[in-house]
Length: 491
Image 1 (spheres, rainbow, N blue to C red):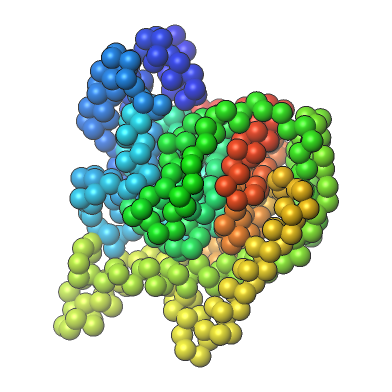
Image 2: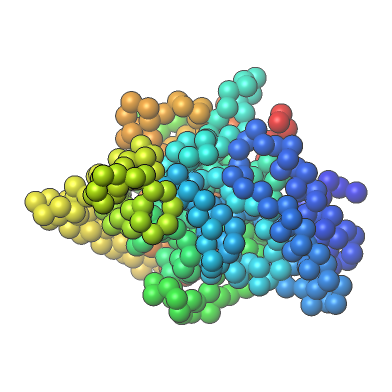
């Protein structure tokens, strides 16, 4: 029998239906794989007992012919999603051993459809980072390595644990969140597929907030089809989230294999950066050629305010973070460091509980929201955001169905290689992804090739609001042309 962990969700679903193996066997295979891969530090909490209990329940449902669309499928959950009676920390010391008495809407929908919880996955602290090095549980290691090198590479962030676990076959799929590229960038670094849905498509209820007007949950999986299967369960209206949009959830999987003939694909000239590596340029050209060969029409488009997206994002996101993180005060839950007064207790708890990157962003956010600087920074950044959104709207109004860009400016880099002296160096990793969040649009990152050192590179497709189906159709064309990439096992 094929190694059970190497099956896609679609293949596993078929095997479970045909009784080729049981959900318990599938779960045990993944639990053994997790145990053997702890060097990757992808999981911050393993839940084997809960997993086996859920697998046995799934087997009973499948046996009765009543299994849901994800019955028996083992998943990993980013530690930003509240899981009832299971520790949820956002990978921050300040949340300590917080155990929520409630379940996030997204995970409750996955369990409703029969999925199995393998454990909680590592992420950058409060989802703030592009490399998964800011977690209080230590950095995640990318299962990919440069050819002929043993250097540990980052998996991207903030959903690095999700991407690393999916790429290393430690779960069949994973939940993730994307505030400025935190699903698409790690997917590109690990040769996995990452989907950032339209803002409002998936409920944010029960997900630890970073920047509320930008955060969106989505899946990371090994194939475009698998990501479509997961999206269908994760999406949907939630009255508990006022930003959740009340529109029907289509059958995303039905979009796989649909013809893309006649679709207009925009190639934005502003994404051709000075000094962009030749291999990224080639990857982009290859992707465009594949879509053209499938019958799509390529058109050059202009998104003139792209150059302002990164600075505007790094004003809006920290501003919202400083507001959202004000609740972590050492009083109600999580870490408490005593002081001689309540003010000192607040200071001590926050100083000890938050890591360097979180403190940096809270300070930036507090500064740009302060009385003297609000108009000069925050208000101006919001105006820029409106212009970025209008750029995309103008583009789609001309009949463009989707936009093709690189996902990242480079392949994965080494742990500790970037951002030590200059945080901006790390922020530049988000250059191709932040516009999508600023405009609230859907985006997908699909593996499309490798660099000269054998590391995976990804392409990004950006779609119209609530038109994820087109992205799945186009993404599958790229996937079929590029083929699948699996890291050689070394752990």
